Image 1 (cartoon, rainbow, N blue to C red):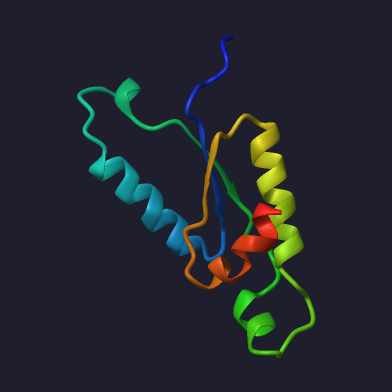
Image 2: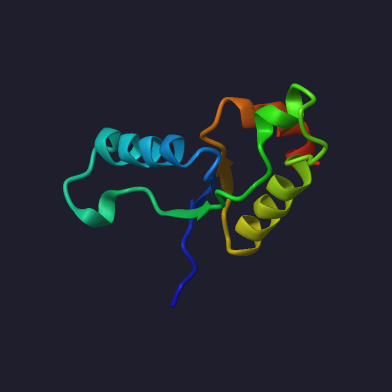
Length: 99
């Protein structure tokens, strides 16, 4: 089987509804005449990532950044060429994930 080109990796589950909403919007907004015209996505719906808000406001010492960075590496290993993070609070950790 040939590798998928332009595979999008989704660091999901932060929160699960934001991930579901993002996926719904991708499908609805993609101009596709058939199933094969849609975007190829690999979704890691990792809901057990430590609480982003609790860490940011100092209520938790569990840093979710390294966990999301590991998820990014997993998605890249699977072939993702672009990563998305459908969670506003999680974007606090973008630099940590990118490193």
